[in-house]
Length: 281
Ligand SMILES: NC(=O)c1ccc[n+]([C@@H]2O[C@H](COP(=O)([O-])OP(=O)(O)OC[C@H]3O[C@@H](n4cnc5c(N)ncnc54)[C@H](O)[C@@H]3O)[C@@H](O)[C@H]2O)c1
Image 1 (cartoon, rainbow, N blue to C red):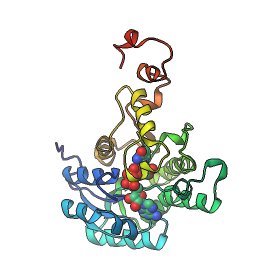
Image 2 (cartoon, rainbow, N blue to C red):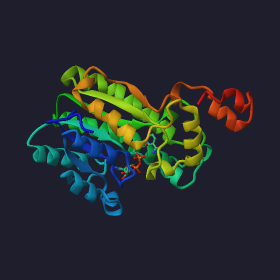
Image 3 (cartoon, protein in one colour):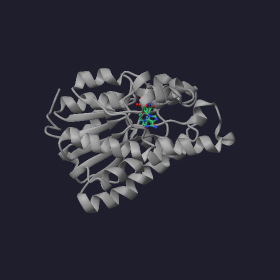
């Protein structure tokens, strides 16, 4: 269903690799809501994934860029402005990768060159995107920038490894730059902290299925899907959330405020019998 929330708006979407990608769902929903978009990803991901299909479906173009490269980002922002015929309104940063996770290096045995790459790709790229957009004065006043994050920035979750540190930095960048861009151009910057989701990046996390099961049992509303995430992000791109900035916003079915649920307790076979708690989901 469309509410025309983004009618007349234009935006740049990083991170659609394939149909599972959260950015893919955001792109589809943004267009359904009336936006015009430009898609971007690394040249390798464009070749390995299916972003060109998404471009066809959504009537958009794909401009390659490695989000760790400032020259690539400068080219991307310039080309996007040319395509849109001027400034645009929103940016989604949906980028994450840890070479330590990929190569099976645990948190107590990190490779520091890999750590530098994790931080550059998953967090500092967010700073680079915002800095380049601001220097090129690419965004309209009251624009909106969103990055996707995970609760491992606040709580330790086994196996999330150095991505936890990257997410903590990412969320800090949203606050620090949110102040600067907000006071100058009323551009708001937020992070959305999403439930574990079955995507290519998600499946790199150790024991994703167990983590998803645990989070689902703990969350009164269940895990948020990629579609749920897209819907939430759209509200942040819309004019309905103009005074929301510098926030880390949970889209997680309530997980972040839970300690223990009946459904999780049942799994561990401790405490009450299930018959005593059957009314509590
Ligand atoms: N899947 C989950 O469980 C989950 C939960 C919370 C937050 N997130 C976050 O959501 C975001 C999107 O991930 P996803 O789950 O949709 O997985 P995904 O694998 O579909 O997307 C990750 C994207 O990052 C891109 N990328 C990697 N290196 C890049 C670079 N140097 N420059 C530009 N792009 C680069 C990849 O090409 C890919 O498109 C990430 O920030 C991730 O940490 C995911």
